[in-house]
Image (cartoon, rainbow, N blue to C red):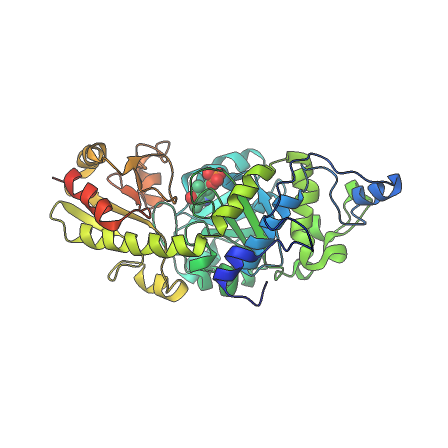
Length: 424
Ligand SMILES: *Cc1c(COP(=O)(O)O)cnc(C)c1O
């Protein structure tokens, strides 16, 4: 499908039925797979032959959906995970060991911040958080001998900072490490980070990809572009023998598939954050309309942003596609067709007014979610980011009065009408 355009890939990639086979991707609701020869099963366990044997590692439904996401992102290999958090975790754990270090943009999703600031620290992996708007010199200064990756979000949730891909990619590559991007908010419809130098792209498919708030899920896509062998000493897990598979060397045996094969063969085997095939099936249905939904989300969000910008009670509005926004130029460069459906704003009455306004909304609901068909709001300082102190909140780009508004695909006049009455 790689020659087709994005809309066609959304609908058709990943699954091509043979003659007389189901037109729609089947749900392989089976934990296990049958073989007629014990020897062949042995070869699968040795990674000598590709094939399914146990759904904790791989499942045909999941693989078809991963292949679609891979095609949309322009990658070489991909896998699904049980959640976006699992995707963030695996993307790093696949290339670090205790004693290693990573660099992250400080404008991150709250869960990702906790994962990298606290949880992986307990495993001996330290993270340095850098201001995404820092200079190249400041970024370079964050690197250490033991740095193994650079991580950032295309459009940060909820700060709506647009990542300067070229700056981050060039710095990562100058220091011989991969650049990993969380592309959840833009989706490959609006931005393909691999085209701007990202080596690995991850997703919380829970958001726009599924699009209906029905399934938690994640994905990891590897571009196949990072030359692990050229930085052999930094990445022994990929470039030296894996004794748990009779000494195979992932880079030598799997080439551009090395990173994803290792993540499947080791991390899925040992940690088991597989997506259920049932959820993968539903995710695939979501992906079939991703291109249509993203366009409407972006159009509606821009209209709401313009409405709020002109409202007397509104102190500020942030929407990367809104002319005059701090990240407008970067958004035009990396995602000229639209950014995402999430906008943020603050009221002149501050934090108290924010809470009051949210409580008055009728159609737009208060939920801990973003990026699905239904419009919703959240107050990060009271909800997703409540474990952060004021300083950490500001570093993450989350003002205490910030309301995150995930603009859905309802009729725009109904959305604005609800906001209007809540602001009275
Ligand atoms: C929601 C989200 C995550 C975490 O994904 P889950 O599917 O909830 O585990 C990671 N990154 C971003 C940008 C998100 O919005």
